[in-house]
Length: 331
Image (cartoon, rainbow, N blue to C red; front, side, top):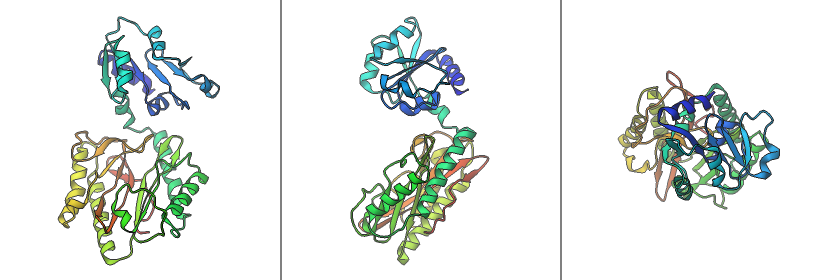
């Protein structure tokens, strides 16, 4: 069980317990997703503090003590004042950090994030299902009308197909709006190119896919460059290489065609319970690729005032990269 592995890792770093606030981390460790603020106290006999209104939803097989959360002071009665260090997440809000630090010596740790980067067979199965839902939803969506209507239909199709919700705010950016990587949805008639970025959620795990429909000769040319950059990046992914090297490979391909300044975001990121997880496939990322990671690879070229093109697929790291996305790159 990952909980035991995490406790061992905490102990090896002189942390007797850890306060977990991040909702995804709580769900990862407990299998339960409270609807409101909750705190998981990780120790040999872990305790989950939740709102009174969540008690009815607690699974009967939850292997944690459950207490009502009223304030952070709840924690003190469950912790040893003589402990060496109390671990906290690197995402802990400053106010909460200050409150806890008044009573305990704390140490910031990313131990849970480290374990979450490597997906189990069950997690991979959920991600594959989320991909399948997203792809089927796209196939049932008509690319006509207006940007916002296409986005609404795609979201509807994902939820009808089994998604809990869209994994993030679906992007449908057509015409000149497509030059903005994270464009806001417009209430305007659909134009070419049409850049779409969408994902589904299945059993709390996400998918993340991008496709671009092109029309003109120049748009086709840019699309072919982006596809080549993605292909070369995926080709070199394997355990042991730096995530930054994947970014370099994709960036070099695009730069060789003279569009280096038009690739204005990272090449990809980890994928799981959150759409954006570690590692980042960016030039500053020092983490190495590991077997069992699920990553997105999403190079793009954006020509300001004209259009943008992005292709994004989800891959599983085995001995090499296995592309999980099956949707045709040409739409």
